[in-house]
Image (cartoon, rainbow, N blue to C red; front, top):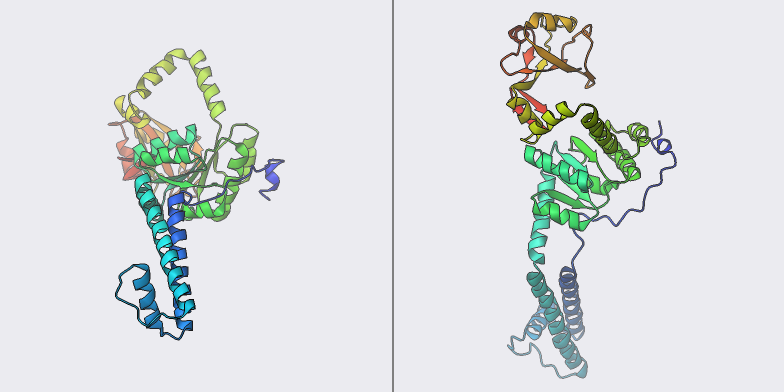
Length: 377
């Protein structure tokens, strides 16, 4: 399927200029310009003295003592008008270039640009060291909340946005950031798309999320892409372009309001629990825990229906889903589902009620992950 056809009349908005972190500041440009002018003046002066018959080492020595005013004396007598004019040009232009460059450096120090430049370098090095990380495309309200949750969970990520104010606020919180258009290949490459595990396209425009999804999928076919969609009709387009999952914030909000209306008591209890901390901590607070159990090849439950696990358990627990060896996920599985080697059964139950019989037939994972939080079992 051609991903371009799946866009269906979606037009990509104009992209801002893409830069790696922050555009070159005026003081930095001033230093670079002054340095280039200084070198050019030195080259012209050396060439002029050599044209008058001087050796290269004598010409270089004359240029240095003239510009920096050391005053050791002339290497050779300067009697001809052309050589005198050249020496005057070297003094005036050389001093001017040095003063211009030093002024830019002083301005950089005053404005704090040096610290920001060093921070940008550290930022680039930090991003280059990332692996198995998440790339957050868009630091709006949803992206900011996502970054906060990942940061709290200790999960590595880098945030991309075109708004410098948002990025500075994120950088102040200790996040790794990139300034640029997330739908551009060079920006995603700088963010380490080939080493990333997840891409979260949470920009406010559906069209931009579509193009981010297309670009990310082309650059890394194995990356997991979670895309935001404001219009429910965009969900099919995002899935067709390569997104693994699509989140519709409007639909989720509407469902939440409906639950508050239809089940106010249950929702009130959940709100009280969630206000105390993260969901995983909330479950532990009421004595519940998620566990991942992997079916091994020599297990007695291998190639047997899921119902046998429920029968042999002899304890109350809930089978939430089964993740197959090929990566597909099946929620609320049927009791007749045959368990295969490599399948992982996700169960929810009381901490002390994990069936002992399951421990004999299933290999328990040393760690499990729920909503981005790694937990020891």
